[in-house]
Amino acid sequence: MSSPRTSVRAGALLLAACAGLAFAAVPASAQQLPDGPALAKNLAKKVTASGINRHLIALQRIADKNGGNRAAGTKGYDQSLDYVAGLLRGAGFEVSTPAFTYPVQITDAAFADAGGTKVDAFAMQLSPQTPVGGVTGALVAVPQDATPGCEATDYTGLDVKGKVALVRRGACTFNQKQANAAAAGAIAILVANNADGPLQGVTVGEGATIPTGGISKADGDTLFGKNGVSTTVDLRFHTEDKPSRNLIAETKTGRKNNVVMVGSHLDSVDEGPGINDNGTGSAALLETALQLGASPKVSNAVRFAWWGAEELGLVGSTKYVQSLTFEQQLDIALYLNFDMIASPNSGYFVYDGDNSDGVGAGEGPYGSSQIEAALAGFLNETGTPTEGTDFDGRSDYGEFIANGIPAGGIFTGAEGVKTAAQAEKWGGTAGVAYDKCYHSKCDNLGNIDRVALDRNADAIAWVTASYAISTEDINGVPPKNNVAKAAKAAARKSLIAGQAKKGKAAKASHAAVR
View 1 (cartoon, helix red, strand yellow):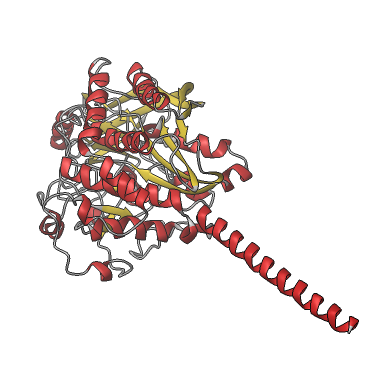
View 2 (cartoon, one colour):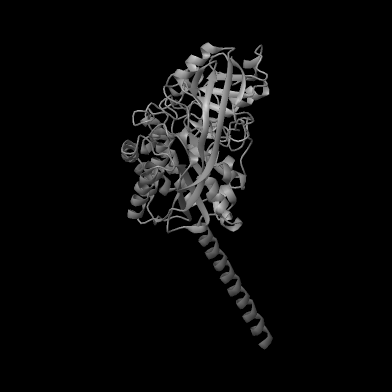
């Protein structure tokens, strides 16, 4: 996952009810849980950080046995999927692993040559290519401040027209960096890693207009000393379709035409085991499913999904939604997305369903605001203040929203930097990334905030179970017991009316005889 932009929650939708709550030093106890359905309370108690941690250990060991990662197209991913599927089948779930294909970039050229100093430069996913022979222009080093290349003003006073921009990774998305460079007239951009190792297997996102390549931290340090040197960037590739699988597990009970869908991506990047991104979301979902059980007493079926090839452009979730007919899409009441829920320098972000922050992509489909309220409300009421984060299209909710399905989720931050105000509110360290090991080798078992994992797991369990009982605030569909009660009340009313009518008829007949 790439980090969404973040902003302070201004709306009083739920915070008014929670004003004055101190930030809890420990996860909320069972006694502190707010009022709600019994199923939600019980599931929040049963889904524990220790249970989730066992799954994270499993994912780490799978990565260790398979070259250090669990990326799409590798044995590490296949074994991760088999691990999750095996536990779910053992718990009685109906499990399927629908196949799909995803495009793989096969490198044809991947370098930058600055006056004879040649370094590896890997084209990011969805980057435009250079022509054969590359593009050539003077190298322009963008200042390495706290937000390098993230603002248009970073190019004030820099002549980059027809030249190659060099920026350091961090503080904003790759897409934002390339967009600012392109607007200033650059013909290509090189992004230097801010952690040791190469920068590859990442996506620049949709809409990139200039070739965008990633280089290692060490090579970046070298090239920052080559400012003004004539530089050739050659980024060329071709694509091949490769097979992968999603994993879908659904409860046997509950309505099949008003399904609560909950998802996370299971794949890592090539660079590391992906324990925070997104072992945490995947493991929390798995433990929630196992503790809920395959046949819970619910009104609405719950459909759990583990997506493949998210790190290659949200492929698995996109292909899944697109494979559904309109009627099958109508069967999905809402979609909850959990991608990175225990970053080591955690923020507590809830997707901004109502666009009350007024930034980025705008509000989600009707019902997204209610999902935001439910997640933020639970966290705030149990002592964890939240902020909003934009639906910027960088995780698996994207295709659901595009088809009008309400969505929401929680997120603890990626390469974005924690502010002083956030550190005061949440703890942690200001001026440091939420996840300093984002998309890196060090995203391992030591890269987890287990307090955040526990808090967010409670929220996931609570909200999933609550919607399994009722989605009435999302789409007007009441709980089954309410429907039954209404039917009984109507039948009783009809019976009473019928008896009264018979009584009147009998009286009239008696009067006529007299």
